[in-house]
Every structure is written in C-alpha cells, then in structure tokens.
Length: 108
Length: 114
Image 1: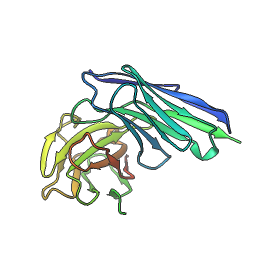
Image 2: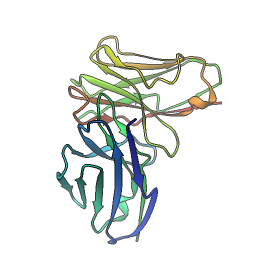
Image 3: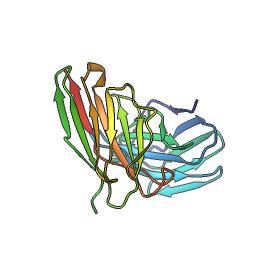
C-alpha cells in the first residue's frame, strides 16, 4: 500500500530561520511527487512537481528536492506569510496519496 | 483566470438528509477528482473522472456516496442519508489531461452533519 509520512507534524520558526520539511514515501512505481501549500479554510495550492530522483525545483524562498525514498522542502529565510500547512503527495497511478502535512508557523 | 469553483462553501445537514456538492473545474480540463479531508489530515481520494467516464471510485467510503459528471464538465458529489462521520471538507481538483499533470484544487465544501 502506498504511504506518505511527513515530519515534523508542526514547526515553529522565527523569521529568517531556515529549515527543512521532510516527506518520506513508499510507493509501487513513483510517477511524480507534488508539494502543495494549504492555508486555513482554503484548498491546497500547487507549489512543485518532481518526477525523478535528483531533481530540484525552486520558487522564491522554497526549494524542493527528491531522492528515491524522500523529498525535502527547504525554506530559506522564511517570512510570516510562509505560515501554512505544507502537504506532500505521491502519484503512483490514477490518484494522489497525501501525507498529513507539516503545519509551519513563522513568527517575527 | 477562473480556477476550480465549488458550491456551496458551507453546508449544515441533519443526520439522514441527502446533500449534493457541486464542482466547476477549470475550463478545458479533462480530469476531475474528488477528495475528502478530515480535520488535521491530508486529503483522501474519493473518485476520478476523465471526461464523463468515472474511471476510479475506489475511495468512496460507502454506497451512500455517488458522483457524476454527465457532460464531462461540472461534477456533483451526492451523499445520501448523511451520517456524522461524513462531516469533513470535500475538495474537488481538475487537471488538464491525465492525473499526472498538476491537479488544481477548489476551495472545498465544508460539510457538517448534526
């Protein structure tokens, strides 16, 4: 059975304090790994898609990387507006399988 | 441009009532997905359409849940005889062709069954 585990469950950072979120997965044939951001009361907002080990993508203060067993979302010098839940999902077949997310809070 | 829209945004139902949740995907998107998200959890897959064909309904939790997309555009998720455990946010997503492309999500419908 496909499984996605995200850690930590919650993370509190001060503004400017860089860190990484982890997404480890077991899946029979990975076709893609997705990162989404979700704000309270809203639907997930697409951030990145990674398709193969070694791939990296960047957007503003976020950088996503992928290995054969896990993905990292690196946040460099975060700002309070980066506070959200970050969801990782794998694409093995016809549907996305999500992790439970990491709730990130960035304080001044 | 217009994204995925869902209505209603909030729905309160009495236990035993039937409810219908609507999803308008991004124009031209072939694939449409429904997910259920419980509080503090990630979305869980319910069902998937490609045009009007329902290709996967393995995530529907019981035969009280039914989804349709008769003209390959708007979709409706219907829940019959609602139970308290049906309380959740129901998310709709669409993608351009197959599911491998990025899925774009709507804002969700928050269902509360009393």
